[in-house]
Amino acid sequence: MASAVTLTAEDFGTLTNGLSRSVSVQKFTWQTAAGLKLSVLNLDAAIIELCAPDRTWKSTANVLLGVETLDEYLQLDPTLTCAAHFEKGWPILTGNGVQPETPGCFGMVDLNRVWHSFVDETRLHLSLVRKSSAKHRNTYATVTISVEPSNVVRIQYQTCCTNSEVFRLAHRFLFNLGGCDSGAQGTFDHVVQLNADTYVDDKRNLCMVGDSFADLRIAQHLGLSLYKARNEGLKGVDSIGGIYGLNNTAEDGFAMRLIHTGSGRAMELYCNFPWMHFSSLDHLPKGRNAIVPFYPREGLQRVSIIFDLEQFILSVVSGTEETKASNEDQDKAQTNDSGVQQEVSTYSRKYIMNDGFLLHPLACPFRSVENPKATAPGTPDTQLPYPCRGQTPVPFIGNVTLKFGICKPLSPQEDAQSPLASN
Image (cartoon, rainbow, N blue to C red):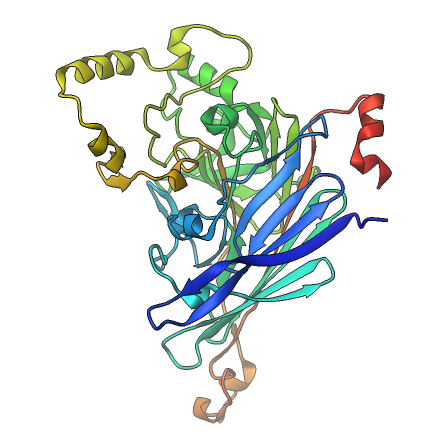
């Protein structure tokens, strides 16, 4: 009898640095009898594929904005990868969302980004040592991933820094349950629920969720929320996101719930992190010729709902006045709202404005625990073995669980066909 969950490994490519050192990149893939597929690289502990079934149980789609080849992955901005990100202290909030405190490795091949892997039946352990230029200042990290037959993904993060600092570690997920190619239309077809009472906006203001036009403490259909907010003339309608303080004591228990009304896919995220950065990727540049505001499934036909009429007229006027650029120049670059030229490639087609959701669990910075021996009278610090000098390293442990299912009860006929019914 076939196993309800299988884990396989295969070569995904080879990395080579400037010193001609090379290392193999491995892809680990879980497959459940209930139709879930998860693929993880030992490069950055990145999740590059997560396929889930729809309400028919006959069709699956990749619900993660991921990549298919190593070349695609290496050409992505590190802030747009579903990788395990290290961040120390509070994240830096900017107009472009959460940014790491240290620069990424965009365009560089760093072999230290490859994690050591160990497979225990259907559980994967990935470990990494981040070496600092300072003596005895290393960070040890472990990511453990397992998949259950009921389409549940469990991830545990552990870090420990030898100089008593704490580095958070968590995946930065980019989800679209409509499928990675469904774009903004799929994004705004979601019903979203977030267990949070407060959030920090992009101007670093602490706000109450109840004051937002989209109070995500209750399930909100994003398309209808945007439509209502525009009709009421509310400001900041196109920006949905912030750093939310999670209510982990809520009766429902989950941190975030996503439901895609078209496909019937549903996902709940559980975690013991106190905060979560959530947005509809509104900070990313618009795609070429993209009309993004809102796509209701309720059959509303008015033109003003589909796009901003004033902006449409201005674009027509400016288009007739300007000289048409050559096709070659149009293919070289596109300009985002800040005027920065960006390369246009097939790799970035999934990473444009509103093409999915950013879900990034965040933890609070911890104070170091003083070592009583180091502070005892008459005990010179230099006589203590490292790392007992001064302060004791404080470990960080975080857990994230993703549960996939169907957004409404199945009929008796469908329930009998469900792979979950036999588990």
